[in-house]
Amino acid sequence: MAFYFVYKASKEFKNRGLIPKRLKTLGCRRVCRSFWEVKSDKVNDVLKVIRENQPILLKRTREIKKPRFDDEDNVVDIGSLVVVAYNAEKVEKGRIRGLLRKTPYIRLCRSVYAFSQSHSQYDKKGDLVDVSRFFTFMKEMDGDAKIFPRMTIVNTNPDTINIILERVSTRIEKEADEVFKDYKSLLQMAVNSKADKKTLNEVEKKLYRRFVLIKRVANFYEKWLRIDFARGVMKIYPVTRKLQATRTL
Image (tube, helix red, strand yellow):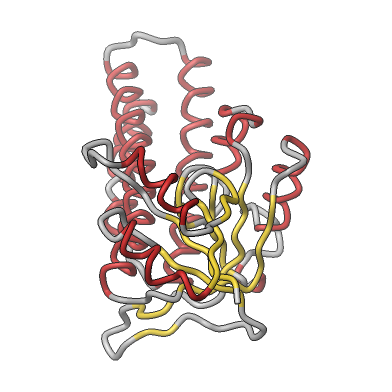
């Protein structure tokens, strides 16, 4: 039986360059970047090699598993995932960055992303990019892009779950902070009359679209993984109201 794994070696990890060599010695096959395939009898040896580098072990299953939560609503099992892997060198960074903003995902490592297996969570309007649209887009730019459905995380210990949740939280918090700062800058421009009305309107419309998109992605994560992003997203509302008040003076 084949297993798959990813790892994230920090720049401070002095032996990070030796990891691929050790994995190849164990008979592992590189799918792309830090995403590898390994036979079941070598899993323990692999985990010893990457144990200090945020290892996430996965396998494919026949059944589709739903996420599981404890009595306090904390996720203990992410459930079934669809993993997409591609060659980052073949993709235009600007285009992929724009697409990822519209996509609820878990970043496993560079150019490897996991998506919820449940298609019913996506809205019918198609405001968010689901895994099918994402893979089609990636396949057009990288003919070697690969998709792995019905993948589940094997090492569902608290450390692994926390790594995943932290990556998701950091993503939303970072995007919300960027929009918040841009709104504050726009507010300052309006107060100081440093831009004409047309320019202010255009910038505000773009910011509002990003704000709405962040809310949609955050809502998806809240339903999927039960992460509460209300505080991070809600902080943007006061500055939008101040901007509106300034524009009406």
